[in-house]
Length: 214
Image (cartoon, rainbow, N blue to C red; front, side, top):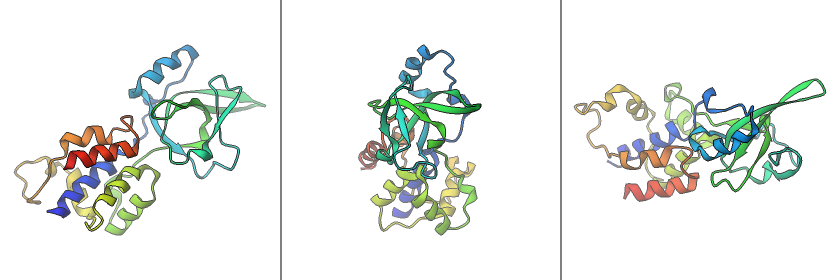
């Protein structure tokens, strides 16, 4: 059934395209020489987006790691996924400011960003939605749902069903004898490479998904 295929596809993107907060995934760089270690260990990256509520024109800079020279402006990278791999605090005129050390996926940009210019990628639990319309509205608007939006575009005539998505998150979905849905497509072969945030950009993950489902 096309309907069930779509629900399983969309859920995969919704549940894992945004990482939930995990304080152990962000490290304080007490020794700056350790930054190269964290940069090479993508398992320790934490997924962020630019914060559209705090970024203003010409002031959201990415500095070099020594924090002495402006290198980029976040306004030019509004669709980029950023990964925080360490942070440090800096005191200025009696105030303490937190700065993140970040990289993009292919590590072509590495620098320092004021923490309030970024926002953590988080995903709302499916249990918080009571209607198909509220669920779809969230997917269409949330920064963390870029992957889910891309999957939706692959199935323009397929309906969204929040009840089916809730079922998939339940223990019943793992029961091989459950007959609630008769036709289910197994996406396990592409699930991990498609959904783990550190494994590619949204575009590359959508290509993997497209290739894996054929």
